[in-house]
Image (cartoon, rainbow, N blue to C red):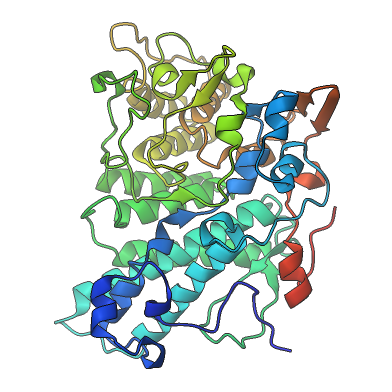
Length: 455
């Protein structure tokens, strides 16, 4: 039996992906018989619309940022969403046909395209005439593959622990374009080390400047590397990567300058603080059908500009999220996230003043200037408390809260039992519960016989 990932098709050509340009289709009439061979071919492959989609939609649905009445809960699209909201053990992802609804399929679809590009690149000679384009394409392919590996690890793996990472299950690391390649789950250490090494290589090869918000540059690769290192508790490397990202892009959108605060969508995806367009996969009506948790919303003070830019009041006097950067929820990295990673890393490395400096560098752009007072802390522990609170408020709906819960639950100071009361039923999720690791979808397990997560 072929050990295929269920989502990897036998079609390796750009013309059969819906996102390829009309120019490509015009030039390649018999697409099914053509193998991409030129840098232009490979560049077009990486311009497919599928690369705007990102993962972590399921864990966004499951996180504690939302609350529901019984009626709202019943209105969720599918039983899968309801299982996520109530933290049902053994929740099984549905095998949605549409790519933008299927996290597993979308991730490995992108991974396979990247593998095709990397394989063909190795067959093209890099020379002085093509070096710039060659390096850029190489860097983009490594970036997108690494991003999807990280998304999958954040959803289907335990939190990274250096002590147990060689024994903990990682994800299937598909590194070749051969669809008959035998694939098994790697260790969690192998998964993260591959992500780190490829993002470092990506950052070396990507251009220094971002041409537009659909194109990734060095800042984006370093930012994703900083996110990865933070989720490995590697604060020295997280600081270094975030610092590198900041050197290439230090722009932070000043929310004081946004005047259309009553608009249904006041924020702009083309803001220069965004490293690359990224829209959440597995679109749930959770953010609009449910309501933002009162406990979360009440953390925003009246002088916090995000309170009006991120949320809108509904008829039931509860709020929903309106701070979309895209039509779907945005999941990419930004300069704001980089500053928060820098601040947290410095606090955890006992550099209180540097931590507060980075935090205030962001906060002055998020609070009303005429009312803003710089954050102050007596020690690094107090600074970390402030930083983690701002992190949650800044990065709401980015698909990061679940991973933050997984990592913070290992610290007695921050761990918490999640609770949802829906109608007459109360649902709880204790810290470090196995349900924080979502099962591999059964449609994948049944086809490939991967080892399943234990619950």
